[in-house]
Length: 157
Image 1 (cartoon, one colour):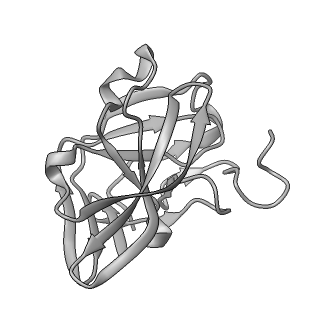
Image 2: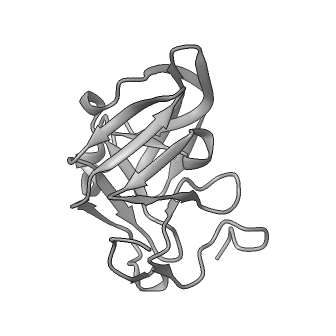
């Protein structure tokens, strides 16, 4: 059961849309809540599970720069972080856009987290599962319908 409205990922726009998240968003790592916010943003893009971005002031985990970078044609250059909560380290579990494109300027400094690299993540009262594959960082919730890309054979459509 979910407290989220039904959404079809095939109806999400391209180019993507950035919007505020009306629900509370929480993330756990190392047995503790490392993010708790009612100020999250999410990016909706065709065939993707939404990616959630947390304001930096609402994350209590330490962010350690990690190797690598990536580039999104819509948002710009991303850098990666290890998340550290007590003795628990989640390697390359988060990313951010320091200087996003103008259309995504509100993402500057916000942190996105791979759901599969932390102990748990929730949108409202709904626990999320990671988007398929090892690249995309969307959060899959039971209210989503349509085909979500990320599994083998789906990354280039």
